[in-house]
Image (cartoon, rainbow, N blue to C red; front, side, top):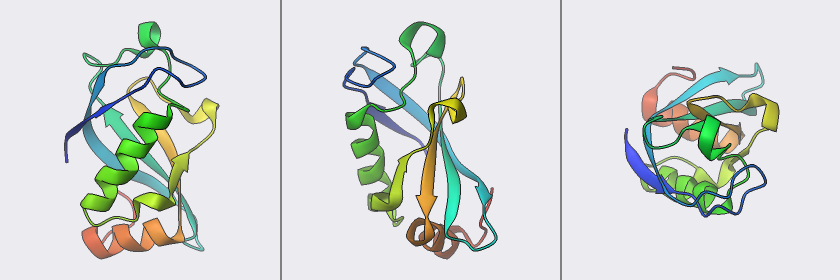
Length: 114
């Protein structure tokens, strides 16, 4: 699943406003209760370089675009929010998801983690 999302440059960790190519989304962790997990939005580093552009983390336009895109693909996008700063990667944005998102992921993909 690929898409292009944008940043506004108004996050706490970056002032860069530009497109970001999302190359994949994964959910590497879900707790035993299935009410909390981590979603990773992997991006192409040719579009966004954390070393020069900063972290996408806290950019409101990126998060809104991702939530909208997830919803359009049958996932509970409103149940997605940024995780903590220390969870952010060099080629992915780390996000927290709740029970509603986890249930929608399982209904769509059949597996909880990929």
